[in-house]
Length: 566
Image (cartoon, rainbow, N blue to C red; front, top):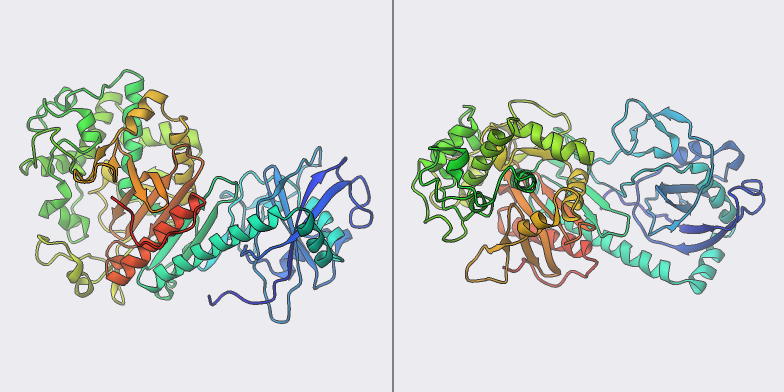
């Protein structure tokens, strides 16, 4: 890749406490810590020599070509030293670190976050010095780090001990304890494959891609890439906000099941109980049928009037009741409960039920019952015409390049409105009133991973309701062992294994988010287009990326296949 440069000579140091921290003079005597070292081949945040030396205490100044860098995360710390060659700017990353106890070290000084660096969370201008890291931008990969509280000085002191003999130490450590080296190389290989898959997706047509993969071992990998032509509009970061589309349904279903657990709703409740007279045959349609898409209701987004608003040709603002009316104004597809057929109308009805039962707006329910308790600081239901500066820009092909990929039956003249951008249009601020409970949540990859973890681990739902959520109906009746749909949650069969999650679309946005049954592993693949990845080469690259990401999440090699089963 264009931003990769040679010159990395890295040693990763892991350590365990053998006595009080800094029992001897830092950088002179040997600290009371057991040290092991091993060579690595990792991509980390770019750290310039000036930044490394600026973070280094004056007592530990190292030679210009042997600069220590520390990655400190919660209960763990990893050290690395590097020697850049001429005109080289190394990039490197930490493997699985060894736990370290730092005892009663003094509190960290707070310093301004400057020069494009940021803390782990949005801040008000100051952050602990060791929280400084490069703000991820396009073509930047990094290892997100949570609850970073350990001082850099500890890491730098330990690194100083190793600077003079990194090569010998690495060889000796590898002979004594080869496991970290083997694991490190495996992780490096997986990270490289992910980066290559992301770049292929961008090279074949995706305007921008964000992925986040957490394999449950404590070091999530997040990557952001974007096509050169998009950079004048915005710079994509792995922390950028994104329209999550139908992933929103999982949150809406969670709210419904919370009320079921509180005995305020029952899955067997007929829709007429809560929305009397709004839906034909509403007495035969239960809340469970709405949740698992077996109601037979027509999908309102297939109504030409709503579709015109979805693509931005019509700026009329639709209300939830109007969206429901558009759906039920078309004949039902089959008798309630007969089979599965995905319909956004189901979740508009559920959103209205939630508001009727609680007396609160859906946006408030998501904030109070999910986002706020979980600390999802960048997750909300987008309503009205609010513009979020953190939102990733979304794009769709212009009319000429879109036409070959529209599905049969699409009304003539259908095309996305928006500011022209070469062969694309910018759809970021198009009419979003057609989404609401079916797909209007905005979030980030990290926020969504936290939501998945909380959901699957039982923090949001009791066991009984979580089991109900994961009870599925076949999406394809001819493949009963393939993909299945539960209550706002999909079971998806990939080449590497079966995962849980959802996918979603909004004008200019496609998203896929998956997790395992425990919630300890998660993956998000966020792409800033729907139809930009419709051409065959782009579609194949996108599916290969999703497969690679899911396999990395599950710690499995990517099989030679291009599509999930089912």
